[in-house]
Length: 176
Image 1 (cartoon, rainbow, N blue to C red):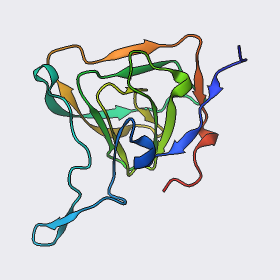
Image 2 (tube, helix red, strand yellow; image 1 turned 90 degrees about the horizontal axis):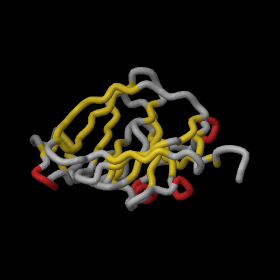
Image 3 (cartoon, rainbow, N blue to C red; image 1 turned 30 degrees about the vertical axis):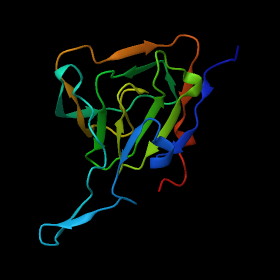
Image 4 (cartoon, rainbow, N blue to C red; image 1 turned 120 degrees about the horizontal axis):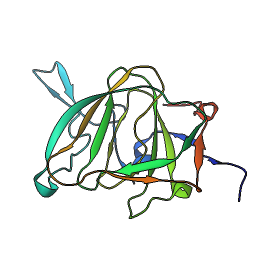
């Protein structure tokens, strides 16, 4: 057994790297078309909500988050089995994302960490394991689009032995 948590490398958030876990919501390198008599670019359908299981409905919320202490040992992950969940930063501040693939039980040895430049949101696919929001600045705010309605839609798993940690000095130097 090792002497502590395995250090999780932090990758820049890109559509290709994140595709297994969901969609990256951003205008950079995204197609658009003009509307409103040519005064507005519409970046259409950057992500798709998936919330209709058990008569769910899409809801919009705002989360106000505070940074955790770093280095951070990842001790839990959660998933939403009945719906997708989108996080869109409102204040343009960078933040971190930790995810693991869909499945009955997540494996921290296979989880990945991403760095959003603050102009990128994410939409977790239904059932994707993820850490709760990881703000890097005080009082950061996120627009959330997720599922409301009946049914159990949040599973949490807590880890005691298989641990990984995030270190801010590992942030990518090129963040797009």
